[in-house]
Length: 308
Image 1: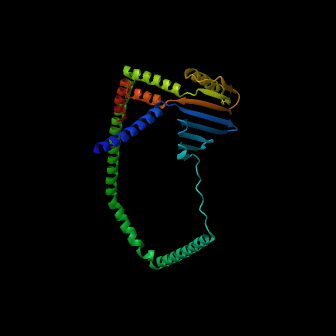
Image 2: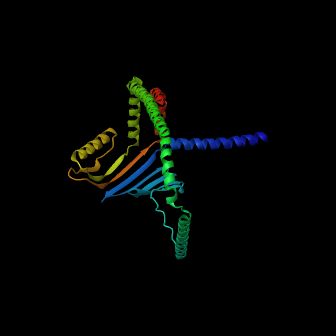
Image 3: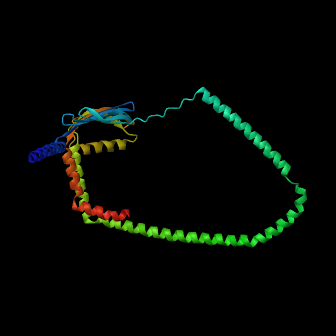
């Protein structure tokens, strides 16, 4: 009896593990599809993008106008996450008439009390203020001798301030000298690290992996019409050259995309529609290859000294 219960528990655990493993394999190797549409007209951009996996079990939608938008995530059609990109303005607090009358009454009472206090203070000062004619002669004598006695102390304070000033200048010079020497050491170390052959090999490897990853993530279908122009004609030509180079490098099909440059004025008008798919497993494997590469790990270890 006990053995049968144990076998039943083990079967249940095995089925659960098998289901989890199958879902993980599907998530890694079943393609994630995406579709995006954007329209720009009269300085107003509208966009609508969606991505899904395995018959819309996981569905992500992002849409909006300009900087305002909404993002939704659904699992089996049930919304599990929602993000609004629109900045909500804080509503102004409504003030009733009773509150306004109370505020005005309290302000009047405070003003009356302050005027009374000021009048009482002026009366006390006038009554307690002694006559200046009685003590004028004595004050002149005592003030002259007191000022003469204070001269040596003031000179001493002046010399102490000058000493402190020289000390601070000396300390700041030594601190800045140490910082400059440390910055110079870090700069020399960074130059040696950048010129090292292993750093160059790591850069070449990372560049190749990034290009492969972008080729895998590229849209398979691109359609639309686009009219663009910059303030300067050379900038328009540079952008057009970058677009053609990127399409050739990443194999982006632009046969159904009509791009018209405007070399006379700054303009952006048109629409674009893209479709594509990618494997999450390919992305994770590429990132793990980069992370566990010997040259990349060596550069990361050596670069820790620069951050200290």
